Amino acid sequence: MNFNCVFPECNFKQNNIEEEEFLKHLREEHQNELADVAKKEKIPIAMAEMITVSNSKVFINS
Image (cartoon, rainbow, N blue to C red; front, side, top):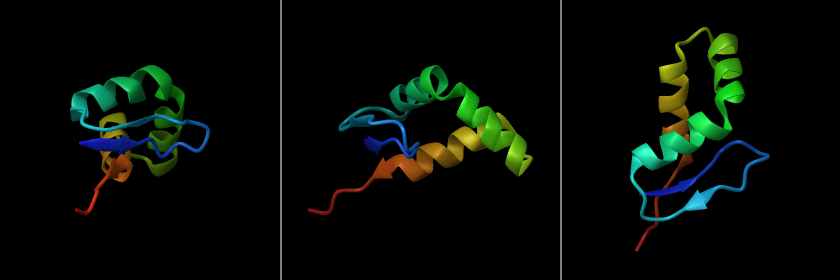
């Protein structure tokens, strides 16, 4: 899959990686942001991760 991190201050872009690799990036680099989103939206951190992964997927039309 192709990912482009949705956090504005982040320039992470990777093609052909597994979702787990992107999750590792989120957990290492954006732990605080994910916790803030989870608290603000009153959702579990795992759900905030899932939404962020979904919003960061880049689909390339061929």
